[in-house]
Image (cartoon, rainbow, N blue to C red; front, side):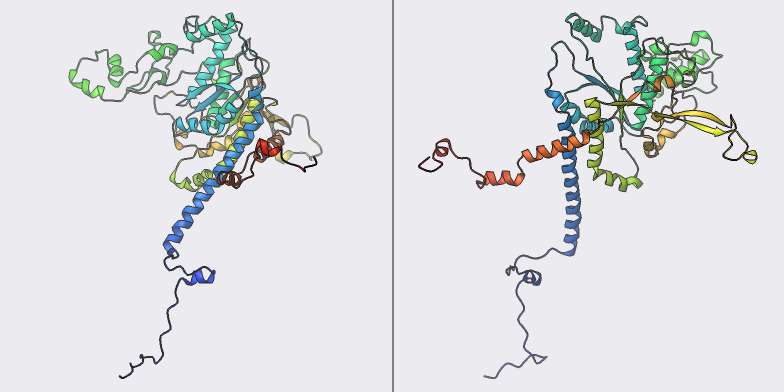
Length: 494
């Protein structure tokens, strides 16, 4: 039988090697069914793995940072408290950031602040604000209630003995239960809340005890939509149109038809065909209570007789919040670097919980030269009166000021025509030395950060590692000898 003719190239084909060449180069056995992922799969696995690793690393160190400050203040929860003394209670002030809702501030509090307060066994009350001005109004009203209880004015109708809080306070006094006699403290979250906090302190301690000045309805050619509190006051309006903002919360907002009919002297039910149209229009939301005192009136207003020589110390915490599609890279970086925020926030909250050290706020004076530069004398000769002070710059004005660059643009818009709402966030801070000189700030004592690091290292050393726990579950960990076996140790002669 004739032999089979050779192939076209004249050479015999070499046998195809078995297995993956990459596996053979690494010395791995020949596995026919295992293949390396494709290029697209490698890109996908690399991106997802890198993001997941960075996220897990950040969350691990964030948890360790929080535990570090929790261990520093945990000894306060073990200290005994007299049976007739209330727990220490601080005041927490939260407000919705510009352009967003209140949930952002609440989630930040629960994630970064609450664990340390719970570890230190602290109680707290919260003053929240969904809109601009509500925190200012709530803090000022709290100070006015304190002044009334101190005897500056009789209690209001809603603060008499029939109210729930006053009844509870009366029962506690009867039983001999005393309030916390040490430092309480305030915690302010965010630059926008800090502005309202400072203005609320000025209004509460410098403002009057009664209702704010009566406002009048504006006389305009076009109808204004809004609550009476948001209307612009007019000096030419008759006295019968004046109203009391304290009782404005019980009044319903006026619609466009009501304003038109009140100005024209007609009834709102004159045309029944327009009733469905007016009912479909959204009603404006009532604005916060108008301030009892304007910032321009601070210098001419006397301080409260019962104002303490030092106000309760406070601490201002940042609330990182930025919106916008173009800010996505910055938001991603912050999302993967929360461990630094947890460490900085934990240090400030720990200073509040420990309350072992506080300092007054600093202030500087700005000067201006009153000498013409062309006629100026040599620097060695400075005549008297050549430099005049302009104003005092307090530290409170610069606290968290860098956060204003990230506010939503709605915080900087001007009020519309007929809108008389206050713009605490947009306006510059007005500081009175009688109030700012009494304010104090919490700070950590010297060596507290080092002690926190030592406590964290000791706690990690005491805890078993994950690998040790797995060895114990698998049965390869160190065995504990049984009681009868421990008596057999040693030589026979012992």
